[in-house]
Amino acid sequence: MNPALILISFLIYTAIIFAIAWVTSRKADSQSFFIGNRQSPWPVVAYGMIGASLSGVTFISIPGWVGETGFTYFMLVLGYVAGYAVITTILLPMYYKLNLTSIYTYLDKRFGVRSYKTGATFFLISRIIGASFRMFLVISVLQVFVFKPFGIPFWVTVVLFMLLIQLYTMKGGIKTIVWTDTMQTTFMLLAVFITVGIILSKMEFSVGEMISTVWESDLSRIVDTEVNSQSFYLKMFLSGMFITIVMTGLDQDMMQKNLSCRNLKDAQKNMTTLSIVLVPVNLVFLFLGAVLFIYASRFNVALPESSDLVFPTIVFEQLGIFAGIVFIIGLISAAYSSADSALTSLTTSFSIDILEMDKKYKDDENLLKKKRQRVHIMMAVLIIFVIVSFEVINDQAIISQLFTFAGYTYGPLLGLYAFGLFTNYGVRDKIVPYVAIGAPILSYVIKQLLESQIHGYKVGFELLLINGFVTIIGLFLIMKPINNKYSNNGEF
Image 1 (cartoon, rainbow, N blue to C red):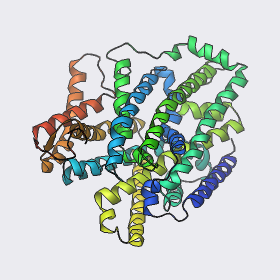
Image 2: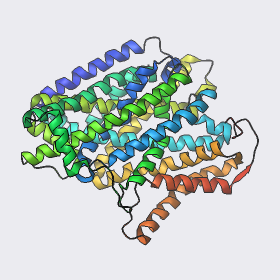
Image 3: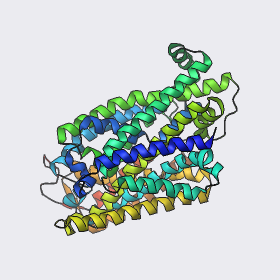
Image 4: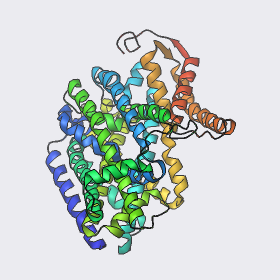
């Protein structure tokens, strides 16, 4: 496929993004950047969050995983629905009642400054690693098919992407992202549907015939009853539930969009709608994966060793120029959608939670804006450094392990919030950072012991639950009586 044609498509798409950013960022201030002045329409937020929830990892990886694990990922998706219900009924009411801009401010009110800073720091680490990993996967594909033929080094591609994202989010922040995510979600979903349509046309299958073919194949297996398996159905469901609670409900990136809604009721509508829509959307991605493997089997297509390259390989080598352009636009949408909100939330959390700019410069909007923009640039540079480091490592197995890092960093957040919401006790605030650091280390030891002592058992996503449980035990060991309005006395 002609790299120049792909590059032109990329530039046109980017120009549209900048046009949206220009319109939405006019008269924007710091409150626009942080919470969109709490004026975001909930249907727009809900729709845009589909793309942000899926990200480039979903766009590239889920179709490829189907060849190895079938539809077992769908049990994780069903767990997501239960997790969104917890967020809607417990976390969102608390965030709105306390009128939070950064959700980690709750930890300050509930436990103290050290707990607050600890929670914010663990989020920053989690989001920097997670966002960098997602960007690495997407940019790697674009590097191979678009920029490498022009002789552009990988690090230049990374800098170019982050510079573009930094520019269109610099002024409007969350106010801009709410609207750009809408466009990006649309193009991401269109890419999937159009790709399926092209494959069905080439195979001369109707939608009904392909659904029957997929259903009758081994690829459609949803329930894995092997207890020791990482995809055991009960393990997947519970993991999906708690992954959603921590990676959405306790994540400033995802909650910042909810907090930009006009009121709690709108935010709850947004979250409920998102939880319902994500079920069929993820099912479509799984269906696409099955279609890709059925197509490859029928036409004897040699598939790459890496499952992440199955989708792009078939598109670029088998489906023609139009399909390639559609794929690239969908991939760019996924890249922008995951990176722009991550950059904005990192800027928000570091500015408010670590530097406390909202307190220091609350009466000087111009100075607050300058300081916030410096943080924005700093976070972009940091993400660039981490992504380029992944490329230097050049070991896919290590990169895959880095993605599971989230299980270690979100565990202490899960434990802190669970202890705060469901007990009436305080903690010795100065010791909390040590508990939060020790919990992931002890969780790693427990993981190794389980896998060595129980033959055939593999710890998967439940690592998050182990980590959260260890954190809670640690907090009980340092607890102290407390009676304030933020303890669990019927309110928060």
